[in-house]
Length: 365
Length: 272
Image 1 (cartoon, each protein chain N blue to C red):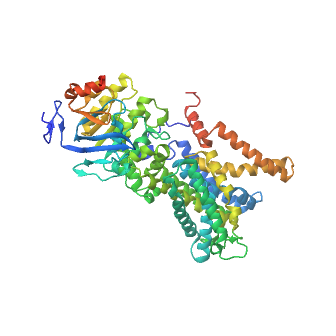
Image 2 (cartoon, chains in turn yellow, blue):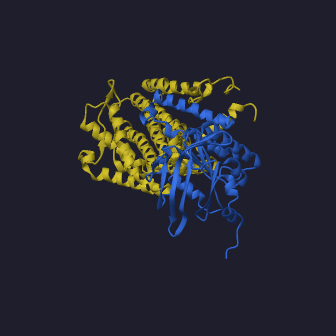
Image 3 (tube, each protein chain N blue to C red):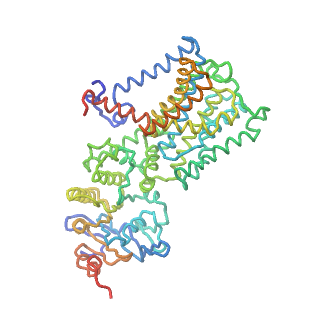
């Protein structure tokens, strides 16, 4: 009854195309922003209820970082229709780029380190996107799989990338923003949380802008019908490569954060293996292809679900941890299958349907 | 009417200018099959030019040659007085040639508005950085182009389906949206591949009216392929007739109607 466009007259094209055309949506968005930006950091800083570190490490940081990565992959797969299984490898590029930048230029601010890592990854992504002009669909997925294995192998075998350390690991030095430590062992959970959150908000906004304008439409045109896209002037290779570039930029930033802010120390095969590529793909499929909101929700789903299941099975039911771990795989896998059968367009589509129903509520039509 | 004159005025008062596109001795082969053999014709500025012929005559191949999907083995294509080099379809689109397809080629995942906005692609220039920031040049450009698109939407009377995903629209409306996408590009030459295929009488009337209005109001040069002879003879200024990849007739609808080769091709004739 309150969720209506009626009476909310749009007088300009800008108002008509705004992100949240319904007032209630706008208010909800600002409320979520306020909670994320003020309430949660304050709770983390004061350690409300104890376990601020657990919350940050088990839920908040992985969620924020995976959300950035899944927005990135969604640009490529959901918007431009180019299937990629190389995201784990591209995250590794971001991580190692940030490591090399941090160790080579100790005075460089971490913000620039992260953004430069994204740019390096974008260049690598464009290079591996070149075959996309000739191969499509599953065949392209196999080609990007080569990127995944090659990149992980390269970071393992070339000692220059891990600064010739004996263990082959890379570990993140301490870096600060405005005097607050955001990386390294002593960084507080709230500082790390806010740093990742700020990047997620900025990048989600950028992704939204790119997808709603000229470039986003050219991506979707290539996705929906490449021949028709070509006859209205969209250059296929350049458009596909731009999607690869933007996508890898996001994924690279996520990789840099995953290493420097979240894990702190990384062994490439373990942290950026093929299972990470699949996890990311599940996130965008469950969340909804071709939707920024879907990417974020999908990341939340895939990060929260295992934690929730573990808490129920170990915490509530008192099962042994190893049995719970096995059941976790079974349940998450089953959920994915059920989801794909019931709603192939993901949570974002459920949300869209709910909103359509709400607009008419309490009437059915 | 003098066909060799630089320009002339039609009976309904439209000015037909000099040729904008000239096809000179085009031959197109697929392996051993000759789809088009040694065909020449021109399209004059401001006219509605129909290409007709029985199935497999090479009409669609001819459109595909014009907008660069196929590259002919022999022959020259002259556009606006210049010989055209072999180009990719998107480069030809940038030159101002738009088209619609026989079987609808809309972007199914996008709304009507987005589909037509995509038609503005070649007219939008902001780079990726401006697009990412959105506020400023990108938003301004978007709104300017939205205004042009809204004119097209008004013109085609599809205001009500602006925000509807095109996959949900009935066939006739999808055809209209596809025309809208081509029109949004404000093309110099508009190619229509069977714009009325599969339509009922009422939809055909609507579509004919839109084609005539586009030509009349915007002065757009149109080349179309159509099987409905009634429509073709009514709306086109000149007709070129193809059969088995050869040109068998070219002229005004009346000339073509009385051409013995054309009659033979359509009605069939005993070969001995």
